[in-house]
Image (cartoon, rainbow, N blue to C red; front, side, top):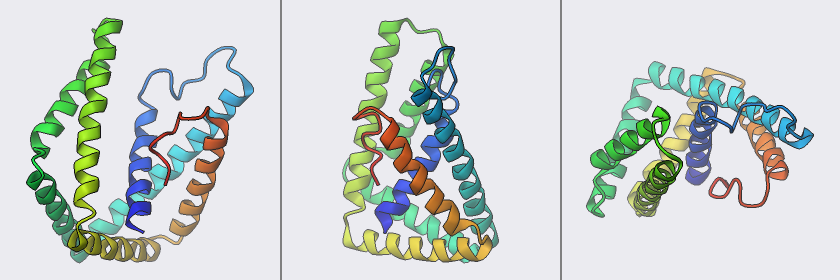
Length: 189
């Protein structure tokens, strides 16, 4: 359950991020029908992800106890990640700096590839530390409880929540079917 929640939120953020990356979500002249369909599916996915993110935000804002529960959980995970030797603050700063470099457009192709490689390595370290922290029984239990409470509150907040999740699962399956093998690696949830 927590893996699904983490995956849903990660995919939601990724879907929202894809729109700002050149070449990923923009239609090109002569794009194949499959590419156009994939772009249309991604657009639908981003719209649903955005709506789900809005419901989540409204739910947290209208439920102070849930907001506190989420904050407590995030602090537990952060502490566990830092106990493993990964400095979250510095890692986030490095990722932000690399993202700014990539978005600046001032990099040569080789520099851009080097920054992307560093970006992916940093992200992998973050993910490994987070995943390891989420295996801690106390954190895992707290995450499952937060997920259950959040989903119940989101469904109460907006009756579209269940349908949005089902639609996103369906779109994710269609996107996987349209993408070359390995293109969505790491997004299997």
